Image (tube, rainbow, N blue to C red; front, side, top):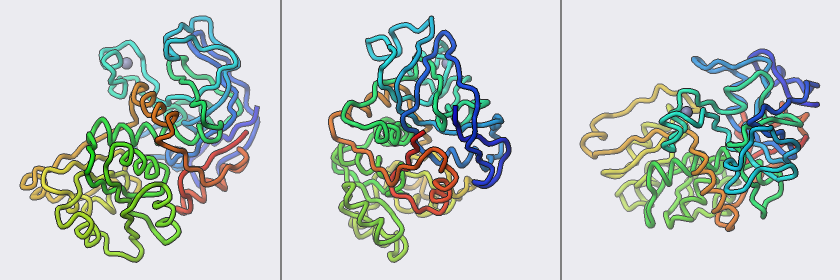
Length: 352
Ligand SMILES: [Zn+2]
């Protein structure tokens, strides 16, 4: 079968569209024919290499797929798929958080604290990710594809959807009427964050770069949009919030935006962070932290239950996929270059 494989760290030129053996499901797994796979920044982090994180070679990246179950392992019980049993022919998406499912953390609904927790397609391998024609996945990690979405649409959502959902709903506990500053406002995470804020009655304030992205942010549902290329971001935040500051900051940029994020928070505000794409050595002015009694919250992916809740909001039409472009699987290198140049609005999707 075809897959996009790399055997060393480097630029997009290390990616090879090539043949690898088709995987066989273990007793607790299902075999999925991939109809569409999503692109995420962790595909690029794995390719470039990250200090302190082992990437297993040969590596197939990709943490989001939508597809059809083609085989079911002998030990698969009914508990992985709502109340029904996963069966051959089912259309599914996957929750990419792999964990032991039996430890104290897993059984208390905190699977991301499991000592065996791994993000599928990022930390797993060899040759075990979504940029491929077939994948195997524990039955406990598959969920029904929302019936109102195509495979391309469904593959664009789970990782960013569940990450943004946990950040805003579970960790920051977003409330109606609150102002939420969203960095990377029309990126994959940003377009989910805007829609989750709207669903909960909050006011999303995405920060974007350029007039085209301002227009897209309005389309996705934001009224107050800040263009960092032409506007003074702190001044616009003061104006929009009537000098109060924002209730929540949605952070995944890190070093470059962190000082602005801290300064933008209102007294008692919450800053929630799930990544640091511009660098992780950020400066925090501790005077803000204690005087204003700010709350700094870390967040990492979500539980399967949080993804299931978010997918119900998708199926009800409250949250919609935002796809920039669909590429043939062979064009992963071209797509990753667009992502690295920040030329993408919403998500890119690959079709085998
Ligand atoms: Zn566990």
